[in-house]
Image (cartoon, rainbow, N blue to C red; front, side, top):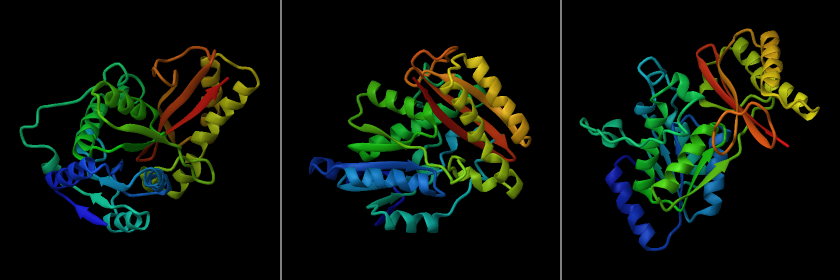
Length: 282
């Protein structure tokens, strides 16, 4: 496995591979790998001749008051995991090599980057879309794999890839959970033991709503009431950022479930802002 820090060097190798017909798989990450990341790597590895994993805590997707400086890192452990999973190139650039001092170009998908995470993080997806576009241009992958935990992000990346005619198939990897249902996340490392014990109830509350849905409840406001009531009892340390039911393709909010919807949420537990989502499909 090569560890590369230079975007120009990475692009040179990937252009050569593309010309030779070698299929590249890309897994963009911010590091601090858990089983969710590893599963994305396995998916890309199976489909590709060469596997590239990027490890870059992208500063442009963090607001000034967010956890950029505190984001957990473990480059040595990540490199070992990437090597064991058959990674050919681990790309670890410095921020200055990805963004010039006078950087002025941004990629945005405004119709999808609204609501949900964008309500409280209005510049977040501009940063995500821009860095993902950069990575796709640098690596020219046949496949790029992103987790379904951030459903909004996945929808945005699929749309920008289509709209910009990028020659990459975007694959969604399933959301991987801890044994008690908590969605795996690098930010789970922020949780104290007490917070961790309560955090499992984020998903348990959504599943309480799903149980009512299975029994015939279709009104979104009623489903939200059920979820919030569960959280009020079992998740007193949690603070809801958002709880929404959306069309899984358009990302538009729905008021009643007539076909399929996705329940998406972000909840603050201590210092951690934790995402989850769940299908509500007829």
